[in-house]
Amino acid sequence: MTQSVIQPLPFLSIDPASRAVSLDGRNPEFYADPNPVYAALHAHCPTFYWKEQRLWTFTGYDQVNSLLRDRRFGRQILHVASREELGLPDPSPHLKNFDAAEAWSLLEIEPPEHTRLRTLVNRAFVSRQIERLTPEIATLCHNAIDTFEKDGRVELLSAFADILPVTMIARMIGIPEEMGPQLLKWSHDYVRMYMFGRTQDDERAADRAAAEFSAYVRDVIARRRAEPRDDLLSHMIHTEHRGQLLTEDELVSTTIVLLNAGHEATVHQIGNAVRTLLESGLAPAAFFSDAKATERTIEECLRISAPVHMFQRWALEDVELDGVPFRRGDRVAMILAAANLDPKKFTDPLAFRPDRDEGPNVSFGAGIHFCIGAPLARLELNVALPILFARLPGLRISEKPVVKDVYHFHGLEALHLEW
Image 1 (tube, rainbow, N blue to C red):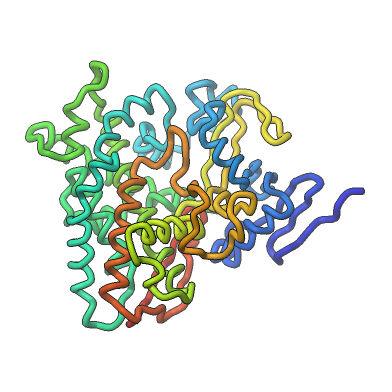
Image 2 (tube, rainbow, N blue to C red):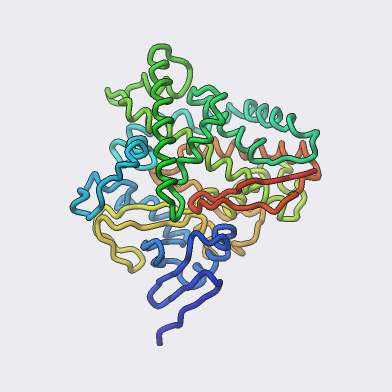
């Protein structure tokens, strides 16, 4: 007998028999608190066809972790098939600057180009290099808190979370840190491309940001060619990989993706983590008693309130997954944040347990596209949060936080605190 359609939430409809799910990604009840939806999907339909997005979607931990590493799927498709073969539309003229800026993005390309670019960048982000930044990160945190500690209240994202990661990634690459506010503006316009139901105004704003961002980066590249410094951009400009230097377009794409990815998710995660900790009702002593406790607390925050929720892949060949046949050129989606809540992997997955030790989350992805900045993001979180809670005893939320309407990136519009 066919099961009836299940509606565990007013805005969620699940048909287990066909594995079809109706879910409006723009519904504030969903994106403000998606974890109950993920729990319902795990209970009834962990692999499903998302009708509104027209995508087969995976939420199981093992499936997502495996799919992220599966070389039969990739971020790029036009290296193995033409637009005509796949029935894809021509590029939109009003997105020509955005498309150009993304053309050589580490997030969007596949080997061998991905291998070459990542090899040139990777050594700056290995853990032993990143750990040396601990004193610098701590100083930035203290300096930021000094500006508002006496006020007894703060909007944390603008006064603290925005400052730390954008300053650190700008310094590493070799961008003047006074460009921080402009980098944030470009980045915010950029990521509107990844929201559900984006408008043409969103697309035009993203294209303008890409044009301005690219022009600025090209100017900095010209200066570093003439006068190299001890920074990542100079390294990328002047270092060969198997006899090849990066082209100008490759340098622009790589610099933009590092600047965007190097702060966007971390800003969200600082806000998500602080909110999670304060709403847990637990005392800060339970979070940061020593380095191991701090590390586990940060990983639990990443697990239960991930900053990036969904990634997509193209099927590079005909393949079957979990009983679903895919043809070359089909798209699939993975919900990383849902994989982190799989009850087959994590006991009582919706509960925040700062001492949890049940294996790694997939918030930074896996495989060749594993987030290159993960060591930096983890270090920033492990340094910043203990300092914040130590400097501001009695910290509490003063206004109900509002989640941004950008589903792929899960973060807050603002986080108002007092002490």
